[in-house]
Image (tube, rainbow, N blue to C red; front, side, top):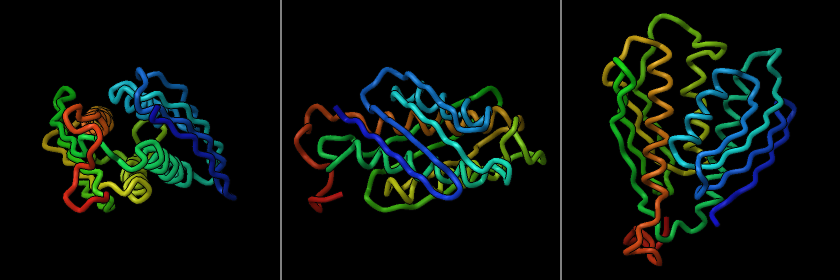
Length: 196
């Protein structure tokens, strides 16, 4: 089973996270932000991952440390659950519609961390109780910890909620493709280098 358990405790956050890549999309998420919970629930449901998360952060300061540290923990969880990455499809991509919003997401579990986040939000600085700038911070922390190359681009969109939710759903669907086992090559590494 491709599972992981991550704990991280700092002066700013205290996080416990469990992930099962071969789950059924169940989730129990308590991040400290209702909207961020909603986004992480979309990630689990549309990725088909089982995700449990409790984050106790210094939200009296703001939500920055929590969003970033959840990204760190989730990235580590994916890296741990994938192990040597033998047999995975490695690449995943999707163009996902969410009403008027259209989001492109492509990723590669290459062993190299890179984020291209080409998503602009309307003038609002918050969606629900989450600062929109923290969405990019979450993904930046994720790619650094998971050693993944990730491109997310907004092709269209005017509704701030639709854009944010489209981003997380597209990410989930691309992840699902990338971590899937390629049955024809289940015992092989998808790289000519011999390592990912």
